[in-house]
Length: 410
Image 1 (cartoon, rainbow, N blue to C red):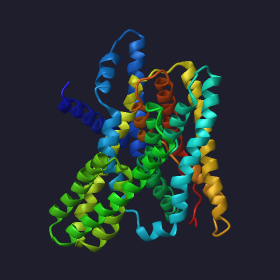
Image 2: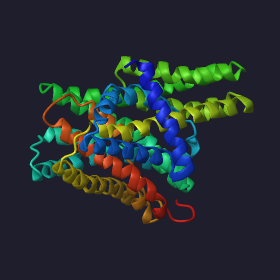
Image 3: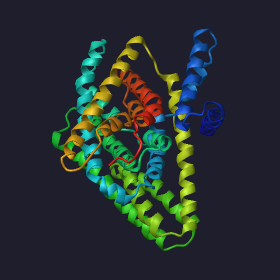
Image 4: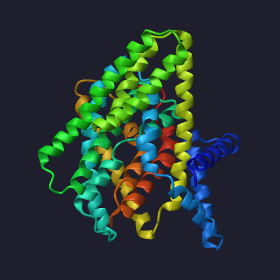
């Protein structure tokens, strides 16, 4: 099937599901679209079981879409840039140490905790997954997904300080998570790699991404300031995302971290100081539409991925255990930093619960799992990832409002 026909089918389904959700189901958009897609997938699987073989055609269709490349090397750059455009630099500065510690050390700690515990979880159900692949699973499931998190925050109407903590952390820790994942993947595929090389790879990816994003952001600000045409200014931001991400891939630095840094700088300097009010409105509308459309398409694709997965009873049980392990690791990796920071500043006790429950996993984790090369452990890692992600988006996302207290949170 041609690429155009694939895009046409997916976008058409997204439009239809959006209408059904808006008109009848009335769930938050991304959650509703994913739920409808999963129900459609389940219905096709049911038809297959009773002798109506529609699933094979649908599975072939979804199998033609390289979800990992579509998200990591396509949609992700646009979604991260759009999400970071409205992060206020002054607000982020107030929470900078909390965000940095949660995004960096929290993600590393969660990777180690999940990897250690899931090793015994896999073995409990007869999956003899080696340690290195368990830590690979820990790396891909530990970062909170900014796409899912930002969508949840919009619907939950969380207080501003909490939004900055959760959104700031999720925007950066997905980049950190990808870097950790790629680093462990290097160890998996190249057993002879030296520890020093692993460390240098991590530094190049993480800090190279920050530096590239800084350069891109200031370059875009300079260009936007020297022209007074909103079409050109919008195109400048678009070129930062497409060209900047391509440069990051070529330099083997973290594209996601570069896009977040560039988006914050463009949003706070280019968007607020370099352009007129009219241009700002056009820029905001453009990126809001990009964000909403790509988000919608992404969550439809996530729901349809069920068609190409294999769920056995053992897979489901280990997935349910993984949900508990991932939440526990998230709680520990949040509780320790917040506990340490509480000696210097005030936090309400419930902030740990909110940061734990609000740390959603989304399509990024599934995309990383799908990028694992074929091996005997790939299937169980992939299905476990999907079960954790589905619980995170559908259950945590829908119930987040109930754990947010009224009033401001420091």
